[in-house]
Amino acid sequence: MGQVEQKLHALGLVLPAPMRLPAGAALPFPWVRVFGNRAFISGHGPLAADGALARPLGKVGTDLTLEQGYEAARLTGLAILASLKQALGDLDRIEAWLRVFGMVNAGAGFNRFPAVINGFTDLILEVFGPDAGAHARSAVGLAGLPFDIPVEIEAEVAIRGL
Amino acid sequence: MGQVEQKLHALGLVLPAPMRLPAGAALPFPWVRVFGNRAFISGHGPLAADGALARPLGKVGTDLTLEQGYEAARLTGLAILASLKQALGDLDRIEAWLRVFGMVNAGAGFNRFPAVINGFTDLILEVFGPDAGAHARSAVGLAGLPFDIPVEIEAEVAIRGL
Amino acid sequence: MGQVEQKLHALGLVLPAPMRLPAGAALPFPWVRVFGNRAFISGHGPLAADGALARPLGKVGTDLTLEQGYEAARLTGLAILASLKQALGDLDRIEAWLRVFGMVNAGAGFNRFPAVINGFTDLILEVFGPDAGAHARSAVGLAGLPFDIPVEIEAEVAIRGL
Image (cartoon, rainbow over all chains, first blue to last red; front, side, top):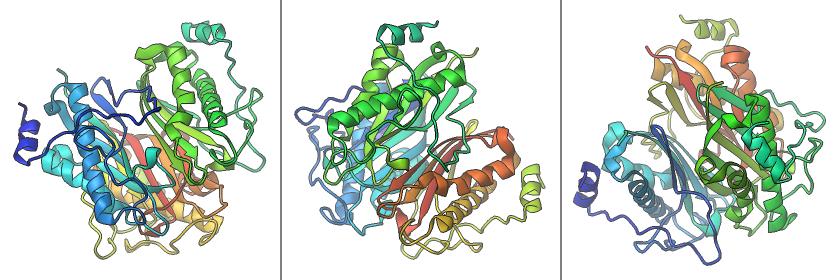
């Protein structure tokens, strides 16, 4: 078990199973696109342990509280780590987080998008530490997200060769 | 004629003319920014064959059906290929699609953004195949897009030297 | 003083102080993530000279005019240059602007997002010139932005070593 997975274990964190798509949905793209020393991460949403979409669904600020949005962002981070593990074989190959684009399904009048996406950033910093884990970030409000997920995050990381 | 253009020809696909801007609009940036082994692609919308904005305009789910949104995403893909051909000289220089950010002009209550952006992804996979064509992707709902275009897509590709 | 700063001085432009966060906000990420020959720039908003959020806040097209939105995008550019100066030491290390993602807090019915984000692009071209300053760009309408800022911009630039 690599260092990152040991850290996840020490923190009591468990990665979800691969995403179980809602019936009728087709996603003809990979969750992670590896090329050279980069991994480009597709937009992920929050997953339950079994890979189903985590509940509640809907807009943060109306259907979800800020705290529920934070938790959704944290779950989105775990889903991304699960995809990275599958794509890279070993999470220790992640040399540096580079860019994180945090999208919040915006309820009318809600604007605390950074406080929601902190659920993702706090997780990454806990697991990867302040050097490898640091990332440029935006946290903004979208008009809608697929399947009414409350949070979607895409990212780019630098990776080491095998 | 390169392999990618032969494939476009075999599929009966024709690239549109360069975009004809609506009157009064100024876009002081290149459609493609080439640097080293990367090409960064500006946000494109769907074009008719003569380079005018394709119709209908508006929001998917209200002004356009899902099927019309899918077609708009496919036309956006052709517009991007036209810009890449102009910037790179030869589409065979595209080594790998990396990242695609698909933005849908979101009608109230519509959330099938992935099914819309599949119009782009399906085109890229048809033309470039599953290896070079695979890309990390997000497909999300925007509150508004320029000129009320229904779809806008930006992307990043890896390119080979001349 | 480097060439870029001489240019800023000649244009009468002054970079704002580092951002003063609104009370209660925590942003656990760097404004610029430097890795190898890239700098990834977090989403920035417009700042006043003292680093406070520039006024007015709100949505462009309703709370702000197009002209005020343009000015907000220009101020966002100056805030980004201030962050880059702090991260890189010398703005002359910027070899090329690559990608700019311009987000406008979209008032109902407003769609002139490119004309708003031109406030940023015009600044970058004035300061860096047409070669280094050119960038791929999207300019789109968001449902909401943090603190109700009217404009948020994230970007990626290529940098030279020290």
